[in-house]
Length: 183
Image (cartoon, rainbow, N blue to C red; front, side, top):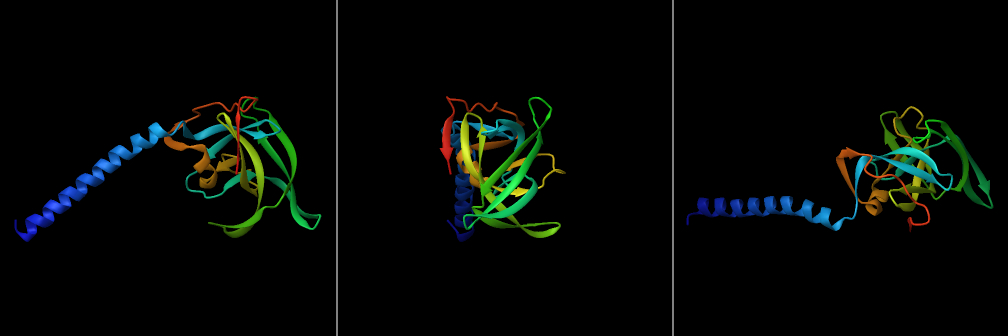
């Protein structure tokens, strides 16, 4: 076998291995994963039980939640934040409003088209499917956005696979039978 034939043979074997890996891996992952979610789902902000449309965003690292009237304050020597969540309840179509006070877990610097800004990050509970997740959410007034809640990769790693061709694959049901999952 000459040198050109050997290189061609190795390249063909390598490409065959890559193609096998690409075709086998997704089906293997799908059989191991218990749930596959769409890129848009319905979730429940807990414990207030507010139904919201959530975008499962593989492009975002940290989850984000719409927060109005954001006010930082000191409580017992720790940084806290007070804010309102005003969203259209996806079940009733009525505006839902809930006030929250949460300890700031950390601050995150977010870069976008309008520049960079620092946002507080807090722990919030969100029901997705049949599981309750206590995860970190950065807070920002998202009133002009289509989705009041984005679920980022840090949370998605606990939730499951996302199929970009699907939406609203399961209703949130985190009653007594829902499994609690913490960060």
